[in-house]
Length: 342
Ligand code: FA5
Image 1 (tube, rainbow, N blue to C red):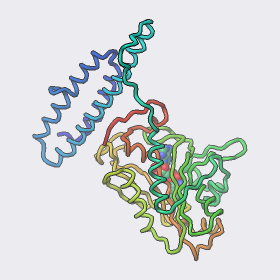
Image 2 (cartoon, rainbow, N blue to C red; image 1 turned 90 degrees about the vertical axis):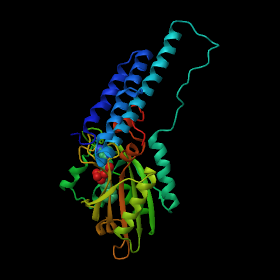
Image 3 (cartoon, protein in one colour; image 1 turned 180 degrees about the vertical axis):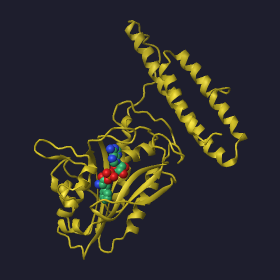
Image 4 (cartoon, protein in one colour; image 1 turned 45 degrees about the vertical axis):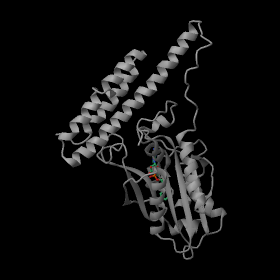
């Protein structure tokens, strides 16, 4: 018996590979009919849904729809490429029909990271936050020491740090900007800080060695974990533009106490488990917590007077989920295409 979707993951790759293998528009049309036509594979899969129990039908239906979206995206993308190739070949042959209507060329657009960043900034500035920045090459004090991560403490290994010859650090997280913000502002403080961070990571679908985070920091009197949870839940709902399942887990970061992780249910498999969420059904998106008293102290703020919350959103993963981009590498390799439209 099917478990809802597992057998369809491979089919996504199959249709994408077949589309890439089409060398002309005729072959591509055959592919379209075979997968998306009235008598095609996907229509057949949809017809088979009727025989399933209701709960399984819903899950499998969603997975088949996702397969259809992937097939459509793969077909459209290859069509554009082959049309452009045909035009280029005509030009190379030295023949050009100047009276022919020009072929549609895809218009340039803003990168999804830029688009979503504008939304994040808009959301937080509307709540009274300002945008703070910090250097990408940091010192140990701002990247580690002031964040309550003592020298030679194993916690430093968590961040897979690169070091320059002069022991400078391409910052491993945007939390360094929290420190700069608290050193240079007087409470109440409300800042977000988007920016690029760097880690000596093994790259896969959800990990890159250079990626973006959006840090958030609020320092005021009587700040509680409830303020943080509400802020994060509202943020995710706003950025996803629709309801998605979230969950909070307790987590340890030396610069917060208590700490938590907000996970979002994997939108690529609707929580069933797939290669992108590594079978768990969840994607870790935003860690956060209440600013540790030692961190306030290191920045010259009296922990008896002030509390704060902080978070550090994995922004590339947020972009992936919002725009249906199923591999973080696509954000950076210039072959960006929407694989699934949610
Ligand atoms: C941190 O970087 C903490 N500074 C976050 C924080 C801020 C905690 C403030 C508490 C208070 P972490 O290493 O888990 O935590 O990274 C934060 C998020 O970045 C992760 O949840 C994940 O969504 C994303 N992330 C982590 N590593 C990578 C990577 N290699 N590629 C892409 N995204 C990543």
